[in-house]
Image 1 (spheres, rainbow, N blue to C red):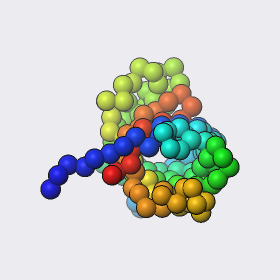
Image 2: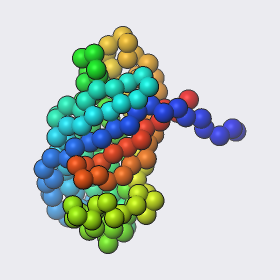
Image 3: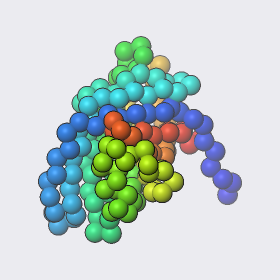
Image 4: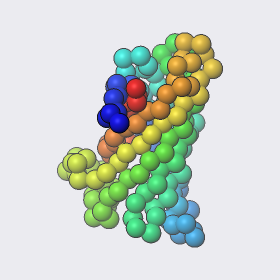
Length: 155
C-alpha cells in the first residue's frame, strides 16, 4: 500500500462565539461552541463561514476533546456548502488553561498539542459538486479569535 497523497484545499479560521458548558454527562464534559463566522481560502475554494454553526465538543474521561461540528460556508460567488467536521484535540489541562487566557494564547506552540480534523461536504451548486466526492483532513491550532485549520484533500 502506498502512502496517502494530499493537496492543499484551504486555510480556515473559525471565529468562536459563546461557549456553553452543559456539564458532566455520562459521556463526559459536554461543551457547545457557537460559530460566529470566519473565512476560508485555498486554490479552488474561498469565502466566508456563515454564523450558523457550532461545535458540540465532548471532553472524554482521558481529557481528549472529541470535536463534532457543522457549519455553512458561503463561497466567493455566493454558493453554499454544508461542512461536517469531526476530530480529536489531545491537550494537557495546563495547556488548555493557558489557551483559555487571551494573553497566553500566543505562548502555546501548536506542536505542544494534537488537534486533527476531517471534513465531509455537501454542495448543490454544479461548480462545487466535486466537494461531494472528497474527504479532507486538517491540522488545527487555537487562535485569539477561535480555531484555525490547514485543510488538505486526500487524493
